[in-house]
Amino acid sequence: MSAHPRTVRLGNGVEMPMVGYGVWQVLPESRTTARVLDAITAGYRLVDTAAAYGNERGVGDAVREVAREDVFVTSKLWNTQHGRDSTLRAFDATMAALRLEVLDLYLVHWPVPGRDLYVETWRAFEELLADGRVRAIGVSNFHAEHLDRLAAETATVPMVNQVELHPYLQQAGLLADLDRRGIVAQAWSPLGQGALLADPVVADVARQVGASPAQVVLRWNLDRGVAVLPRSSNPTRIAENLDLDGVELAAHHVAALDALERDERTGPHPDTFTGE
Ligand code: NAD
Image (cartoon, rainbow, N blue to C red; front, top):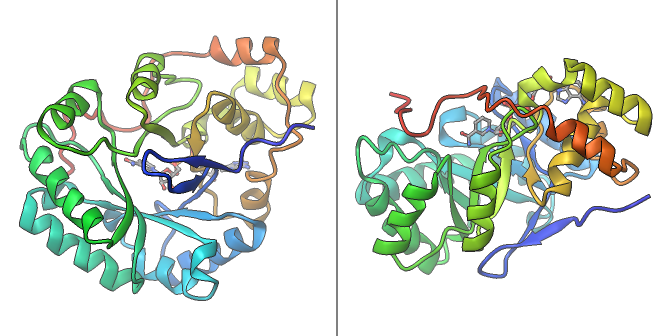
């Protein structure tokens, strides 16, 4: 049995749980609240929402039922809100929906390079951090050239970059780049939106190690030092996705999973996605 580290230390010293519960498409909000409470009961200590998911209120209702320090809450700024003033307004709206005093992590959801406002947006994030309204700030779906702009034109290195990562889209170059910059990688769609669970190679490894396909793929992500955000609405699976300490992958299992690389996205491409 080998325990994975429960948390990772972000660039500013804040500890972030390595496994979180993602609530994209977990709706309506009453259901979001119930599922987040299932996740917290199962032992999750991070919940990942976004303004665009339309369920921040439901997340807040769950978080306010438990001790605030027990849950790390992430939310994200939507693409249409880039720019200083609209970022600050959007943050206020997020906090009004969550009804929390302080957010743990706020992310720029996508760079939207065609609008070229992400640097100004990032400066507004720096203001929120300096004002103590958020404990950590980061980005999502940023590539090296976007991070280069932030490094050249602003004073704060993002603490997290949340990107699509799973055996079909391993992004080894980006991970090495994030490591050099001291940015923690967090995987969205760590199960490839479920596609990996039907892969015969994953099923075979799962049989060999006595775990479920989801546990194998999540463990593969954690073993690369990547934090994960699996989503499920099924309480048994929510608990299964956190129960990873007993899942041990030998070098040949890792090699078999590494060989699944296809450079295949389930979501949009960050260079072109506007979401409008
Ligand atoms: P995922 O990779 O977590 O896969 C979810 C699918 O896998 C669902 O169909 C679910 O029913 C199934 N599943 C989960 N656990 C299972 C299990 N143990 N056994 C069998 N099936 C199981 O996909 P996702 O929801 O796309 O991503 C997870 C989270 O990442 C989201 O909820 C959201 O918080 C975040 N996300 C962020 C972005 C971004 O741009 N930052 C984009 C997409 C998702």
